[in-house]
Image 1 (cartoon, helix red, strand yellow):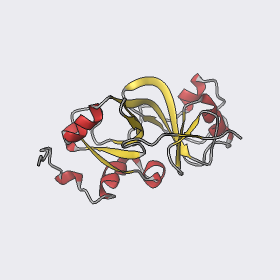
Image 2 (cartoon, rainbow, N blue to C red; image 1 turned 90 degrees about the vertical axis):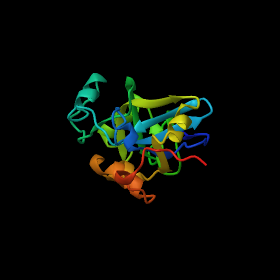
Image 3 (cartoon, one colour; image 1 turned 30 degrees about the vertical axis):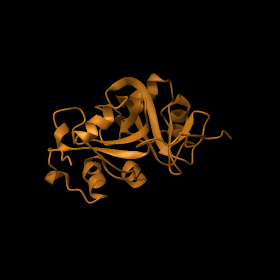
Image 4 (cartoon, helix red, strand yellow; image 1 turned 180 degrees about the horizontal axis):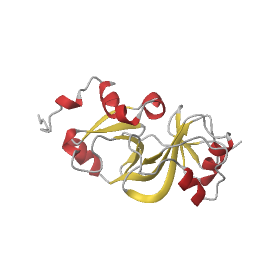
Amino acid sequence: MATIKKSSKGYLEGQFLIATPTLQESCFSKTVVYLCSHDATGAMGLIINQTLDIPDAEKVLKQFRIPTQKRKKMAVHFGGPVDMVRGFVLHSTDYQSEDTFAMNEDIALTSSIDILRDIVEGTGPKKHLLALGYSGWTANQLEREIEANSWLSVPASTEIIFDSKNEVKWQKAAKSVGVDLLKFSDQAGHA
């Protein structure tokens, strides 16, 4: 059995970023991003509440020559606007491979084709979210966007990632810390 590589905890890594109403005119409108990495060089995350206009993963699986007879229906999420041909699976930690990175005790990330084969075969993780593309920020870019009131950072929840419908994840993530985004102001306060 492969050992899960532990990520080096940094900054807001492992948190949700919730888009505030100030981002309503962008591809990030009403999104929840799971932040996979964040350090002095930048940040990378996956949008967990938007799907691509692909009915299910069968088309993606066929491109990788993965037989689809045994598969369960699986949505393909829009992970973000960067590198849309690259796939990621955010999943429960009951699955391990040499390409798996543990985000914490409950959430891991794998970007190899093998995990898709294992999901189809029934030997993959119990809970998973397939995403194409990712969301990325350069050094200090995310910090500036947070200061401009574009994002809220809140603790991540496996229930929101894996067990909630996409349509409710945005409000549910905000309400987990008592925020009503419909009353959110786009004016940043400064002391």
